[in-house]
Length: 493
Image (tube, rainbow, N blue to C red; front, side, top):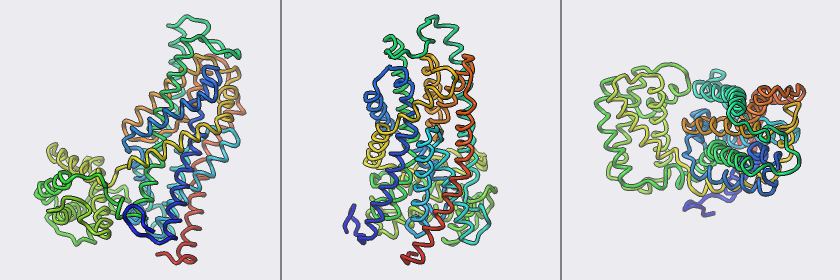
């Protein structure tokens, strides 16, 4: 079968369709699970009729996805075991993708069915950790070596801090509104009729903002996995950025040569190609510091990149196998430089500037999102938004506080959620729309002295606490099962 300029067996084409279907299915579930939070306040306060609210929210999710940078997408991908990212077309790579998506969908559908606002971000991160742990165990390495713990700590910090910001930020904003805006109608519960126009406008604005930033952040989580699927099955078309320009390639060659004396200063040693690859892979998998050997690996692979690309004007000038190998090279180079920067191993400002520019040029060729992938994810997310909003809306509107949600509380929670997600998006960090908004609603109830429903909060907190360990177990179990099937039943390598 001929797809995107590459001939693949019929069975592989079926696997491609199944993997893409699962990835879009994850985003569809994400839509009716997470995006329901964005429409909860406008529907509950009768600011918009449900059909208009979900269409409006879906449209702004679409726009958010389309303008996203891909930073969050690859922040999630960076959590994956390095060897599986580099060999995503192997049996272990296939098992990784399928297990991540299936375990995430199972937990998301389960918590949605119970009406619990759980986090799709936590679900995906937990599944990734489960795959990493299982992969290290099955490969006979040190248990836990397959997890990028430094990146996991960064992501977890964001996921844990954002609900706290949501709670206290929304509480303070509500108190500020009460002190400044002396309009009693703003602090009333919905009475079955649309609120005054100015309140409706405020709530529609906050719904729009949360929907847009949900799309630009949450929508990216499936995009990175879709690109990995495409790279694994169709490396000829997707291993490297198909939109690369001849000037981009020559810029990489020039930067590689300019960096030779800088890298050689840190380590004059020369490593073989395989030794350099092994050293950078090992460095990225641990929390340890860089050694002279790491710098030697960086220098050697950078030099080979310049040699391989010299005189090339397009990646089509490389064979499919060369493209696969070259993608591994520049992925390792970019990630190694990024980690060196984070560990402050580059102390000279001029060197840091040159290495960072080199990292940016390299990562632009592997960390890209095709436009059609953005559209596919945006449509799946938008359709999901239109399907299953009711369960979450009732929980957010009536079951968190002992009193019904007021207009001011809804606006405060959504303004804080919108701002928090926008900040995280700017830094390429994944956050949970569900956690931030639900915490914001709880914060406004606390500030308003409306009381909190202990049973609902206990169930939500239980879902939040259980999400990670259950998804770790699901991810590890499904990965192990898929890997066994692919190796022993289907005979894949």
